[in-house]
Length: 331
Image 1 (cartoon, rainbow, N blue to C red):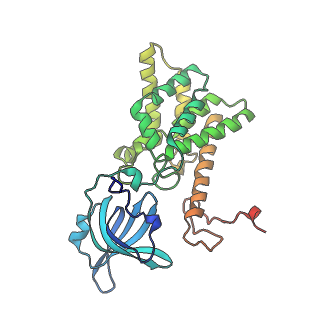
Image 2 (cartoon, rainbow, N blue to C red):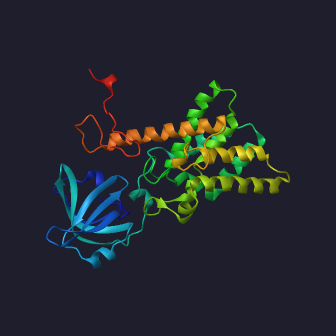
């Protein structure tokens, strides 16, 4: 028998109609106190773990029971699994806060790829930067153990794309690999600035997002956001580097990298305080947009509840429904 009390617990992805759950531990992703048609109270909840999420209901609830539950935290439930509109739904008979030790990797979604291998490959690409100031400035980030650990674990977003542990690293490496492929086509674009800009473009998300019991915004994330935070860090690390070696970092390099970071969303309405104004900023913006949107497309197809339809449900972030079939694989 496993020594890990969570090792044998039921997973959301494995729940089947008719299952009985006894002291099953899940992450309480969402909870709402609602009123029934007869005037009683019930709790509408979403339970989750690394394998997925499931809707749950607790009938005959009360304000005190609702108030005792964490907004985001582990709970133990005694429940049964029923079917609702063709999907599993958990009917909770009893629920309480769990006091078990929390392991985020078991309850939050994670990248399917090997983090160590992705990190090594990212460093391999970054070490090909030839400009001394650019390379030294990047070194100020990657040689900081706390920053490196946060970069390896952080999601790339709260909800829309690469919203899982390791998502930031996966997304960044995707952009670096794309850049390595296309930059030989554009010799007038600075390869060094693009590679460094890709590494830095979402670095502020290590400060913007929290991922202890859920993916959410920190106070810094709400007040500054990752674009502003990233631009501030570039200047701070440049100042630190200048103090260490006794000479300033090329200010044009610093501004170019800051511009890539603050402009990479590409549109004012998407949060960019400036629009791209350099070739390198355009490259980073469009590669970032490509990878983010394709990740959303694939997620929409994979997670669409209607497996029989050729179209997904409406995806607000994409402003579209996605056509699922690969027509090259059909007769």
